[in-house]
Length: 178
Image 1: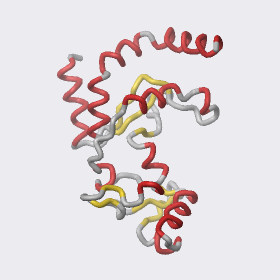
Image 2: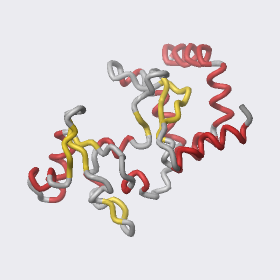
Image 3: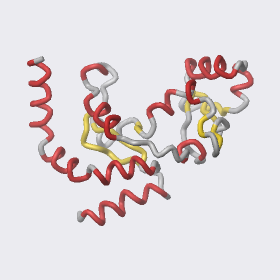
Image 4: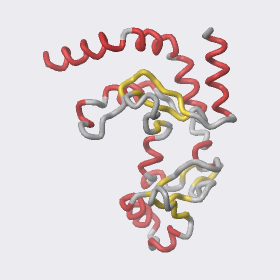
């Protein structure tokens, strides 16, 4: 696939929801400390544009766990009941999700609960790995900064994917030497 065609495919993320799998190791929840190379490299290079698209777009899954709810309620001085009034309960996932657009996003000020924002928000645009590629990081193609990141590093991903086993082995050997 030519670079222009790859860029067009990536740009579809502006209007079509899909994730882009990156050939970087996804964090293994069973051993997060020793498998965070891919996520760490992503966060070193990723530059959020603070556009707020992730906050005001219908369909975004702004899930809240118990700690998120407690932190937001403490930050705002609210009861859980008041916060839940801004959420919907998703029975299949058994989780509370903020209604969209996010009630805490202000187009002028940005996130009005930034210090207490949900864990989901701190990890965006990273998504759980795709079923087809369970060991690769996945990013939300809807995010303009994620699309830009993928385009800028496309050549690197191709080299990385081609040399995946050798790169992982050298990373492991480097860790053993330290």
